[in-house]
Image 1 (tube, helix red, strand yellow):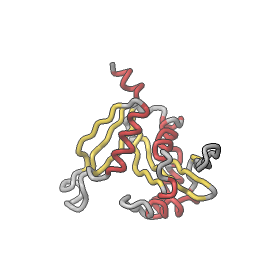
Image 2 (cartoon, rainbow, N blue to C red):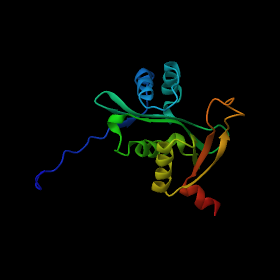
Image 3 (cartoon, rainbow, N blue to C red):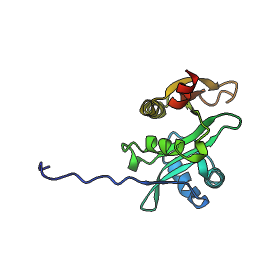
Length: 175
C-alpha cells in the first residue's frame, strides 16, 4: 500500500439495550459462536426484554454482531455476566471489552463493586477477555471453582470457575 493512502477505518457497531424483537438474531449469533452454550431462543427473547437494562447488543447495519447478557446479583453489589458473544465478523475490534465497559457504566450497575462471571478452565478466549478487561479498568481479578463437574453438572460439564473482578473504586474503599 502506498504511504500516502490511509487504510479504511473499521466502523464500530452501535452499542444499545436489546429489544425482545432482537431475540432471534441474538440466538443465531450465540449459535455461531462455538463453544458457547446455546440457550433457547425463548430464553434470549426474555433476556432481551426483562433484563435489557443489564444486557447489551452491538449492531451494525441492522445486524447484531455482539451480545452480552448479565444481571445484578440479588443481595450483592455485583454485576454477573452470563454470556459474551462476538460475531467472527467483528473479532479483533476489542468489542467484548467495549461492551463490558459500556455495561458497567450504566446507571443500572451503579451499585456494583465487582463483576462476576463463570468460565471453564479451557476457555482461553474468555480468560483472555476478562483478564484484559480487568487490566484495562485497573481491577483485581481472582477466581475459584464454583459450579463443579460432579456436584452441579452430574459429571457432564467441566467445572465453572467464578471469576471476580473488583472494581478500582471498591478496592480503594476497602483500603
